[in-house]
Length: 139
Length: 139
Length: 139
Length: 139
Image (cartoon, rainbow over all chains, first blue to last red; front, side):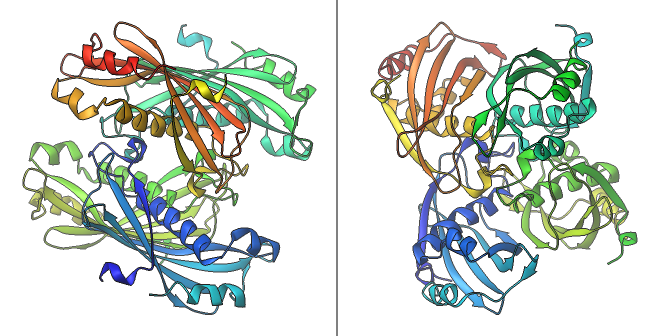
């Protein structure tokens, strides 16, 4: 999967807090990096969490997976790349790559977002405006 | 300050996630340990956050300080000891010690809790039942 | 998958630090819970990280995945259940369930551990004593 | 204390991971923000951790304190401002302010750094080049 397939990236720098005693970024923190990429990407696509809330909706993560390729270390800069994957009825996928600033692929990730109505604790169909916005984030 | 001055302790074990690249517990995580001790201690004293919420109140941390004496390492067991400090009009202090299972003092901490009314974003006097319960947690 | 298929469990309580603004446990923290279960399970099986280190070996996580079924909230108790999955040449799988204390299944997880030689940055065959110990952790 | 007294600032944005069930940034995460400011500030002053390591030295945090003034919320941008405080024989102080992008002061912090020799587990005098560099970071 070439970098060209990701329409969006955000640069970050590894914090001391994110390392562990093996001297590299702790494995769970890659899902935090995914969240940073996801938040910035959805803002870029015009999908505001606040707007969803005003419609009485929210989304939650239904599935997440990470494949680790190479470690990141303290103070290294890296890019979180994001693209929209499959869009279904109540859920959509996001795919991520974490690349060290020199291009080394450190991790691949996928998350599945589920739109739901907190008041009814029930998954609901992705609103049309969100669906349209997501179409702009596919490679 | 002898251990005897702490009326309460809870044992924990260092998680891999809590270490950093220096091979010891990351400095900010001691405030997480304080929170674990505080939550358990308040439950022990009968001060339930839910009960406060039903009265339309909550509390927040206004100040926190840590003095680090010795490092904790992965998989080590330790005790978070807690006692009530000064109780004032709208706030009260808690003092903590983090002791490795063999008794080595690793850190001392203090936090200041402030009772407030979220609806008015205003500090309010500590309710009498909380005040009475806190009196039971002084050494 | 019935609870009976997990030969090991460790009970934990949700920390305030582990919640997010949706009022539930933040999604990345389930991988921290997996680590707590994994550490305790490997200790139970007699697979000590220190012993691996003395052989000049270590292990890292190559893949991790989570399926979220129901949220966990502050102060709730839960069990992290663990069992050994497929054991291959240089890697082995662990499967986890996170169950609220009343039995509600909150999440399923899988991690793939890879044994490697840090000096050569190269995956190596799982040592025989580790292989034998892992055989004791399958359901 | 006016903003003018801080010779350095780094802008960050609140991550979802950093919030808690009260809807604001969890109190221990301010020490992570301090670390982000400290790392960037020391790099700016030319004090490289790698250079210290090559001299067989490292530094650790001996004390940390936080005063909380106003909450930060998800997605808000803020500045971590840093300045050098008192420089003593083996330790030096850093002072921090966390200001929301519109200027609201959210927290004040102080940390005390102690230079030590990991091989001897003993505090040592701040090297002259570090002392000179720190002089450039006072307001």
